[in-house]
Length: 426
Image 1 (tube, one colour):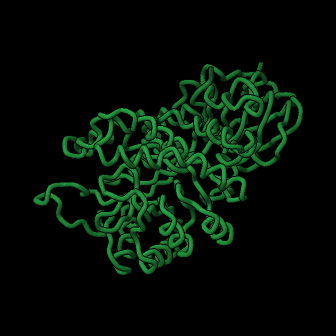
Image 2 (cartoon, one colour; image 1 turned 120 degrees about the vertical axis):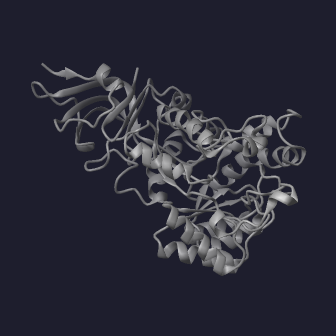
């Protein structure tokens, strides 16, 4: 008889056996085609797809089998902008003085599991402290905790007083002068040193804060914060180490400098204009919108006690603009990869971004592809992930009905597989 693994896989914490697993899928979004496929058989061996066949193929006697004919499956989702080391809440700004790294690390574990259970099997983790996302990445790889596959940037790079300077607004006697080791650089030589420190700590890519930001206690939310020479030094050094560079940027001038320097992606992009759109298309720069973060901070800005006063002002001003920026960028043909900035918005709610993208005019299929094939292409992992295809990692996410007809289905994930291992099956 077939061995139906629906219940067994819910609790599986060890690697899959080598025997092939047959999966009958009701409807499949494969990440490659713009069309929904009905009635598909997947065969999985050693954590990878070994066959993707039309129709419900016969299952050999005694073979492992999953019956998923009652739902729609798609490749494991990818969120290219997360912060698993935090989740914004009243009192967040004082925690840096009351918590130790171990406190933060333990809080990351449920955030990671929540993200995986929401269907996001891979994330790009864009900025933390104490190398915690790198440690979490390694713990997940080793099977110690459950979570998505992590590509970690480690500590974001900033200039003195910039958005990712960890000592902004501290009292003079504790402020000090952080250097490249702590992600604060000034001048091309320190810029290169900052990249090399990220390499030393085991990062997978580089994150920079090319402009001011909303949530930092620095005054400006949009001013350029790196010179062109500093940006070129970062990108050129990153290239030597095989790193992509992701650039947080709200203001126009900072975006222009970062794009000309050769960053891989612009995160947020709030004040993107036609010139910037043309630059992004010319340079092949990806856009990661993070509408979820903009919507969340704008909503929280209505609460007088949630943010410090200057942050509240910036959140109310900048947050509501991102969805409209996304709409203009999509219409103009900018390459868009899915990203939420979760940690600003709550972890596990990542899929709300799909709803906001569709509201702004992106078709549901394109929105899903932005979190599968396009995200994988941007991250340089398309040979392994992003589509359901022979030879690729067996990451699968299932929802009860057709998300192309109701994008809200993306909030109803009831099946999650990563590397051929099932973590959720309801």
